[in-house]
Length: 295
Image 1: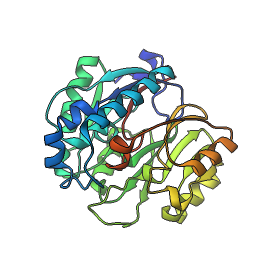
Image 2: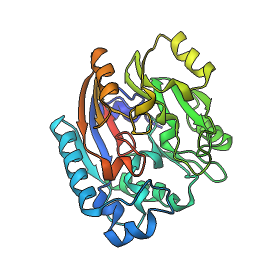
Image 3: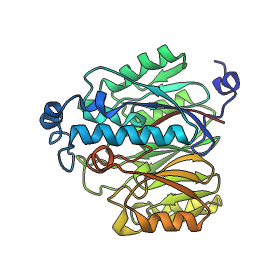
């Protein structure tokens, strides 16, 4: 199969290149209505009920921020996929070979990869393969550390079968399986990217108290500098930031110490208000976006 990064002139196997194009799903489509939000939020373990109108306003402002930063937006519209479909990263993985559609552990999200597949077909984005049941893997557990190294969290959302299938789909990639902690248990939303966000080729934002010692040691051995998220800002998505370009990031408003530490390391930080679209559903800006092209 052709390397689609060559055909599009873009870099795909990175989290820190200049972000050119993303897939989004507006809260208006994901949440549907105040009535649907009321019916679903408890079953999806949201912290509290999102306010529909305010969520739509927050999302408008989030999308406008991305556009101001030079990012082209593609939209996943329509369909009754549930509240969690606003977090588009989880249903797919990007690679130079094409998109890999995930298999979601959370039953309520099982249709999202198929729905994204139809969007990618419409956009002309090649799909390289998909994870088949009984494998599970979610995009929030997957992050590129460099062009040939993909870290994958092994926890309640991603299992060994799913990781094994991913190895077969990406045979030329060094896939690092990272054991995740039990933390708050199988009903909680905890991914690898809950405790790690790349900011540059040699810089990571991390929450070390939940990070496995062998993995953290490996990151240091590979030359990464680590910016530590303080304990009081972990639950408010302090560790979940979206890199727009090397050392340029979008972060959820309300984590001032994390922002100060990033800026002290030379990171330009842009914030958005996300009480309804991020805090209540425990999904920050990386969760809200599926990067499609970087350069």
